[in-house]
Image (cartoon, rainbow, N blue to C red; front, side, top):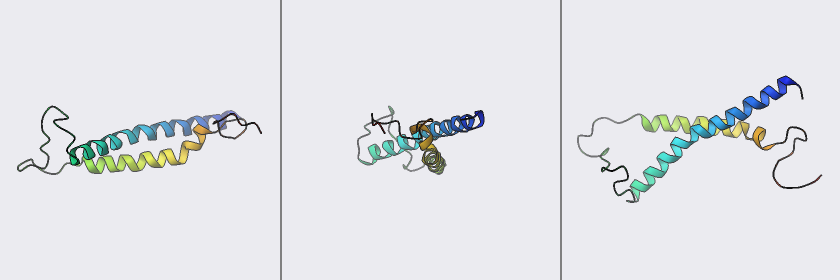
Length: 100
């Protein structure tokens, strides 16, 4: 492999890990929502959650932000995962001790 191919592989690996970073906040948001929905929060943040109470103000843009983060993260992980899990020399998967 030449230097240009190595640089492309490093870039794709970076994009994969960046995609995982983008997926962390939406996953935590879904877990928090499910805990609140099932009544398992019990003052999870030290004070009761009052976003849907009367007089709480306007709607937040956080769901849109988290949705876009999830879409971008999933796109980056989907398109670049093969560069993380394949071997440079043999183009085979790194998992297992299979000999060919």
